[in-house]
Image (cartoon, rainbow, N blue to C red; front, side, top):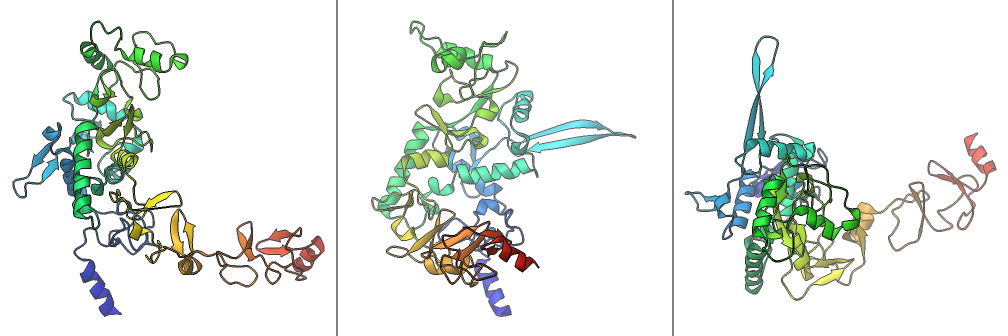
Length: 425
């Protein structure tokens, strides 16, 4: 047994994050162990982003690769050691004096990311306008949230063929072209400005005789005239998402690909599909909507529900409302191929019949055996029985209760008040 443990440690030693604890499962997970083709832990089935895996360097390189060969190259740097493009995210450190009884101490707050603007007051106000649990203060819940969003919104396997599992040369070419296209046509990074600054740029960009006013109030009136409230004194700017007014002294987010006639509140700059804040204001603009990278890509290509990768092959399976690589429609527990086999969906994941009976099937209160997924059952108040005359019986007189009225107490069922009283006495 000791030898087996030692071999396991050596085998997994090369895996980054191996053994990292799971935030969701805590002690129930033995530690992160990457599945050989799914993007999950083999021990607890949670994603890598749910584990305490150090990833800041990898995240910066991933975003750096995303910005490579785009107009956002000013936001990356290539290290002399390996030449890999790395994201130069803006880190903001705020210091403020705190009065104490004897002397004054300095309180320091570090944001792992902040809008890259020169006006720190504007950046600080931006942070105050997003939910506190999503503010990326180092060591906080918000920093953990940002880390998860980087993994969810910008999967490395959506832009880097080397992060995918067994792509053919033709699929690699298709993916490279797909990435090149979205980089040039839909990828963008939001910026923050005061509404009147964006309004000025919008006015400058508008054609003088087009007949269209480019103020943000006009956008609101055109798109949602009936719902438009009266503009407060001194403000004529509206959020493109919530249609509520913008405060002139507060920062607004704008997206260059959407045009200067659109603004968003900091907390409204979210993905159209998942409604989550766009991490580091990185967006994908398509048909008048903002998307995160994950959901933009999924709107263009089918995504495999097994490996989470985009599908570039012409042949794939559709089952249970999801898409799958042909060889990835497998049991979520044992990885056996399910083509032509009986399976049961557990939490939107297919599980073969043997694994279902072993790991997920409910137990019959009558015979205390697992209930086969193909067998009829009776369920009530969290308890289950085989729907048979041998199992669904009165706990007192053994009368079959199928199709009959019954009463239940803590997993026991009775045909009558009398039988219930007999068991209670």
